[in-house]
Image (cartoon, rainbow, N blue to C red):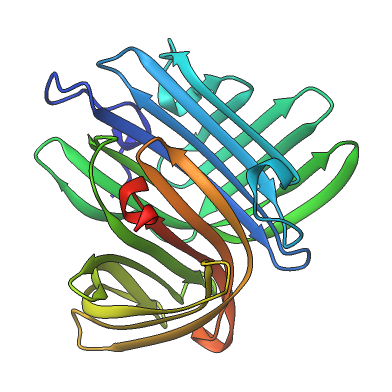
Amino acid sequence: MVRREDDRFHAPTSADPWWTETCWFSFGDPRYDLSGTFYPLFRRNLGVAALGVTIWDASAHEPWRALYHRTHWHLPFPAGELDELSLAGLRYETLEPGSRYRVRYRDGELLDVDLEYRGLIPVHEAGVAGGHGHLDQPCRFEGVVTLRGRRIEVAGFDMRDRSWQVRADDRSTRGAYSYGIAGARDAFLAFSFRLGDEDRVVAGFLMRDGEKADLVSGTRQVVRSAGGWPAQVTIAARDRLGRELIARGATRNRLAHQASPGLFAWMSFTAWDFAGGCHGQDQDISSPDQLAR
């Protein structure tokens, strides 16, 4: 169901200062192993916002060595609506509610991005109830990234997501957000959390041959590199229709990404053997205390 309000800010359901809203877009082009992330974060009860933008490839994973990295903290909460966002060089424009978006970002002569996203399927809802929620949508993206004067035309499939909830920076968590997109008829998304001694799939979906159903069980297994980041990932899950998902992925690049003070992720552009071969991401997520262990 396309709802205009899903593209706009949600009113906080409590006075908790950790009430948080996010609106993330990502891209990855396998021709160059080139990836990008646009991650604005809003805390209306504090009157502040933040923004992280990074462009990276397989040449480096450290933010200070990435092709481009900029983080803004303690920005004033924007005056306008989220569906026509203007924030520290980032511009979001909703062209068609729930399905078509324009993402632009400009930082002087360092970076100029102009991308259009088209939803391949209606948004997937995860836990939308009681004044909080999470939306995910596989998209087709295309546009231009101009990096220090070098013009790069990019295109492919990737994900966007939205969340609104209380999200404390001092919470302890470990999990993952893994997806592969072959097109409008074949895609998967798996949310997993560390429970006991394994990563268990707790949410997500499987789209196979145009039929979509929620994931209801499964595991995520990881082979790590000597540097600690995921090198190979296997998702073994089952959906509500009883269909089995086995997706094996090899990471092609990665970014050590501190999305917020309480959230670190290895964000890896990943080649999956799903649906005859496709691409997506594996985000290996830890709070700082879990990462230290």
